[in-house]
Structure formats: structure tokens, C-alpha cells
Length: 158
Image 1 (cartoon, one colour):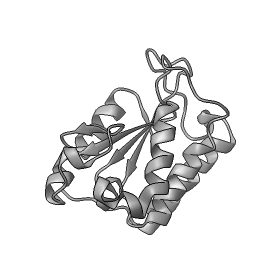
Image 2 (image 1 turned 180 degrees about the horizontal axis):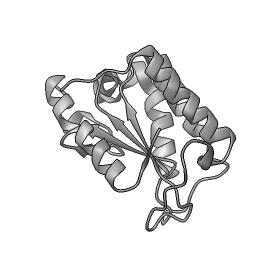
Image 3 (image 1 turned 30 degrees about the vertical axis):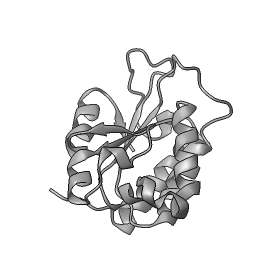
Image 4 (image 1 turned 135 degrees about the vertical axis):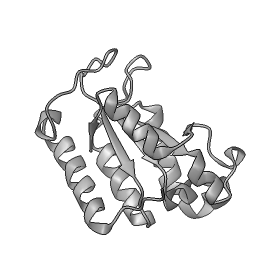
């Protein structure tokens, strides 16, 4: 099933990221303990945005979470699941157009702030092969299934 993020839903996620950045994670939802996560709370963001500006806003909010890079043994607190038209921003052929988005996402991923996962089903629908996606992005067979799996594993939904 193809899902898109309405402007209202985007604003809700944007607001939640704002709260997560400006206050304790418990202000968003009760803390969810994660095995192996020293902070004890992890979030999954079900992302499907339609504009570069919306994607930049999501990444900028995540960027505000860091005061310094996280150690390699500290898992990312936010899993960004991409399964909509925003996957086109990460097509290597579009790098010249979306360079700032890709570079910011790569930095946040490298700093273990976010973990980006792209839906292979949507990639097929949009004609995007794995060889055309930057190496920092992980792949999942189905974005919606991944969101449900992470939620079942105790991730709080952003």
C-alpha cells in the first residue's frame, strides 16, 4: 500500500521532532527502554515527504539533537524510514540537485543520530536500484513493515 505524508502529518512529525530536540524524550512518549541503547529511548520516524524543504526540516530537527558525535557503540536514537517520493533525493544521479540534503543525512548517520532505511518496494516502483543510492543508507524490503517491526521492538513513533 502506497502511503504519503500529508502536510498536516508532516507538521505533526516536525512538531514532535521539535519537542524531542527541545526537551526530554519523555515529553514525546513515555520512555521505551532499548536493549543496547545507553539512552534507553529510540524513535522511529515514518517519513514520506514531497518536497526538499520538508526533508531539510526533518534533518535540521534531527541535527539539533547533537551536541557532539555519538560513539560508534551508541546506536542511533532515530530510525528514519523512507518509503515515499523522498527517496528520489537520495538518488546518486540527483546528487547535484540535493547535495545539501544528502550530505547532512550522511553526517547525521555517521554521527549515529539517525539511521536511514529505504524501502526496496518503493525503490522498485520508482525505478531506483541499490547501486544508485549512497552507501550510508540501509535497505528494508517494505517500509511500512519495518515501521511496524520497530514499533513492536519498543521504538516510540515520532
